[in-house]
Length: 575
Image 1 (cartoon, rainbow, N blue to C red):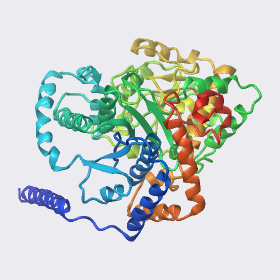
Image 2: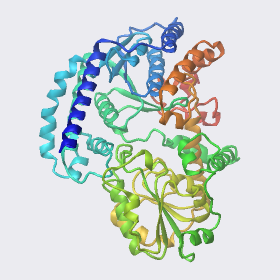
Image 3: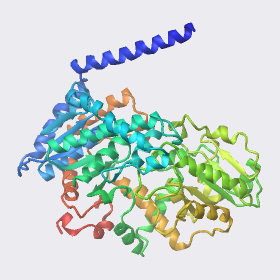
Image 4: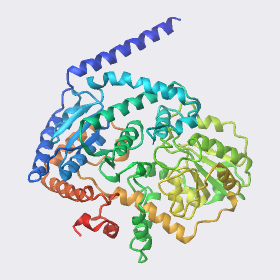
């Protein structure tokens, strides 16, 4: 009893300290480091110089930037938005999820003509309380997870984003409409009231967002599009991927999915000048010779590669006469619905997994390997422990591979008869070597003719029960897979963003104080290096060509990949 009282007292004291510190920081700013102070001055100088002679237009409109918490994303969004503002003769409007005294807020003030609106400011304290009323009304109407997924406001779909936001709290599935849903609805309605207020107060012409998934990104972007405001999705740090969204019809178009014009142009090439570098990149990817955190985890050279089915089946006690099917599990709470317009076949990744396991148990003419997501440790779930679920496995034709198993995923090209996933890149990677993939929903590479895409659960079940009969992909299908993989993994990630210093994907995901200090030092060094400043100026011009042409909707670096130029509107580069 004494321990319980002590624990409650500790939690109460901790809550009080956090709130007291928050109130303190509303008044007393966090001191800027020397590097941050130097960045503030150098950044303001750079943008003033870049804007010289480009002050035309009435500059009455704004480019909106909802500020992300990660410093790399925050600064990359801000610099790109400043390029947008310069090109379109707009002013910058930052929607900040912090206090005016925060480091981020003061650094953002170094951008020209910047106005900052604070989600945590005094203006929205009452709005937060006001948002509870519509949240409660919606909560009473939503009875089942299916109701939640179909939830709409003003005819716009938001249920997918709200469902995924619940999962992001550390859950594999939504099995009941409970207080998790209520709190998420409350936050959704708060964000809705904030963005509607901002749209009403400021003439926003365009917006820059790093994420269109997640509750803030989904809510803000869809409300902007509902009002006819263009949204530019900017993904990446030292690499830049840009996708233009013009209306609600565009919601659910994956920013990294190759547009049809690019794909068809690359497929039509017959001299090998595109296919050869595509094949070289794919081999380097399998060899983990690329800077990609997912490839690094999957194709870890320190782990064992199986080059034949016999040795693999002997290692795991499987019947070598049976083909091997790999089920590539997902990070269960990694936004299963918000990426794509077409709904998943199943309620979520968890239900896809459980139904696949049920079918596997009764389909014993193949070996089923359920492979955990390589970054499963990064997406823990409170309601599912996959390894524990397989601990009682009594089926001789089913095995589970942990994420830390001594197994290099490169082995699949030698072992797999087929691959199962929903949106995982494994389905694309192994299609490049002829292995068929069965999808449980829309993906970044579906619709190009080399994936198997069941329409519903019944068709999915029939496909799995007859999966032994699947044939390897044809030569044309393999070529299509290679082209899509080259575009998705290499071309889109090949546009180097000179406004952001290089940090590996692993460093970005494991950000710490040392990373933060290094970021500001490198930013200052860039802004003081005349050669690098010249690269930034020239890139601002190239990006402006994209920004000013509404018919160019997916940015590619035409200097690095000139063969894609015929797919880009001629007026975008002075043609």
